[in-house]
Image (tube, rainbow, N blue to C red; front, side, top):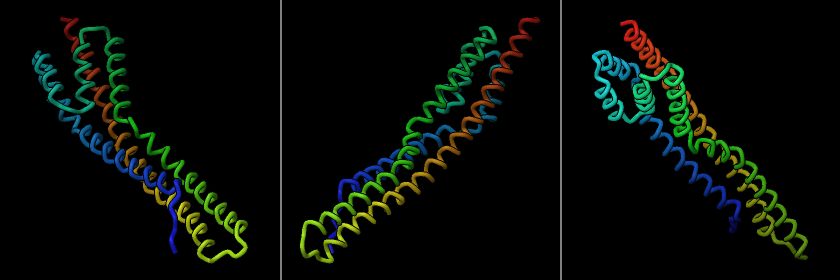
Length: 204
């Protein structure tokens, strides 16, 4: 028995390949984004306490992580008002989160539409079977099985794509949420530290 693969089959295969590519690209990016932000902040704060802003910025530039970019933004705006400082840090934080979240929604969309595309392939396969029955006086068993198998394979492949892609999206979302929490904590700490330093300088 020869089972023909219709366009729905190849669409699902393409979606599966795209999903794997997006997953590994985002997983690598999120892994690079995770650092021990507490140790990083401790080092930057020690340098800032000694009055060396340029050295602190240099440390941030050498660290390829969203936390470092947010801290660098805070240092660059430390002499402005507290409102400007917080707005600058919040804006940079949202930009970094948006960069990390890029293409993540694509996985969620693929996970949602894959079963529907598989169902479409199922319907098309059964339509082919019905047409084969109506078009021929004598219908062979192979003709019936061919359309039926195409229909069932489309449904199975739709689920086979959707389930692992859902797991991929969930695992990446958990990593991203952890990174966001750490980013917010670091932003809050560096803004609080710079604000307290500015108050001390004002008192002096």
